[in-house]
Length: 621
Image (tube, rainbow, N blue to C red; front, top):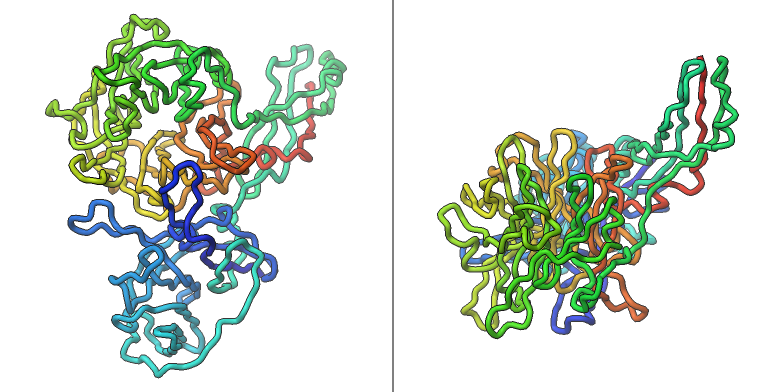
């Protein structure tokens, strides 16, 4: 029988940061969330989502509070009611402190699959007192509830779950059975027995996905016909019941022995192939010392007229790298296509997160200008090319992005990371926007939110609708140290739109994470209600060994296999475990059985080295 453990984590109060003294990130933002682990025997438990949280309470924004208050949860407890539905009890907190708004209450969630949770209500228990360690069991037609307050234990038995305050008993004693789980930092809640189907769903949606089986291939040809130039690949099967077709190198000697002049069958051995990339990917910086110092942040590869163009964050000299394959762009020397003039008294102007897009046959470079390298002054802009993208003379000077009435985009703050896409004959841009309180001392900034608007395709720096806020930082994982949602990027599959974004601290780059929101193609994308946000991050420091703070990604289709690749940056650490500069990486996007992109497959999870042998049955008729 399978079992699920719910728990939170404990550890050092703050995340260490050697590079930016004075920056403080509270680990409770990440640790005090619902974590799950799964077991087949009730003894050995495997943490899901790499021992990171899967349910975080929403931050609370009140009148006049533009940054909101980060909420955390403690003391999770899972139980199954008489209707068969699993529910979760927990206590909401203000990070490491009691939450004055919910003193005396227990949070109650319900879940159909242990993956998706809906907050049902707050159960009133003991007004004005902090409740801890709630428990609930249903047996003999009664809910048996226990909790602690003021150091005392209380018990309640009731036929009604939602309101039992009037039945509150006197203090009582009680203990949660002791257990030891070999999970780093685990603070256990409880263990619940689950069905095989529930366990399969948990593993498929929240577990590591890995290659489990390799199929074989078949090919039929007519007598005296030539073998096709491109022989079939094989289907690889994965732990969540998803599949992926991979190319194969078929044995040349065995193929040469095939006699196509007569009917028969031949069995051709082969080796399954995969693309894998080192991290970090080596970069050709040319002779620009500024680029060498910066490393590479925010890499973006775009297919353009049969070739591929790499852009990134850089200096005031905007660069392109152009090659015949996506991977080869990193080894190409940078081509300077625009030199931004320095303003009086400035020695440096940065350009952030450049993206090349072709709109109705015209190339545009979406980027942001950062005068003096000061992040508080960065503004989104667009450059238009009237000819050859590699010729600096064919590029116009940057057009600052403006609202539909001509006012600059976010005059009271910053705008950056703008991306463009077209859906249902409407042109959209999504970007990150943040209000800065320039008059404050020390300087204060609001949250960095994601906005969407329509634009004029002939001048995509010109909005044609009012900006609409799609997302503001809601969870501990996109509010840790700094409340940031930025770097939106679109990935399409069938009739669905998947927009990844990066959240949490940009200064303490190890904390950077990749989140996801989805919508259906053809919907009114200016309506926030059509967008669904996955409540946990899809890619974190824990996802990939020795790649810290992965994020700010783009997607590109591999011209050889048709696979979706994710291009991103992450941070390596030096021998003293200190952060280095951001560096680029590439990995294949795997489409899971539950319909989400998996961004964290390691090479060995993508292709098991022990499962690379396969066979082609070639039949001549």
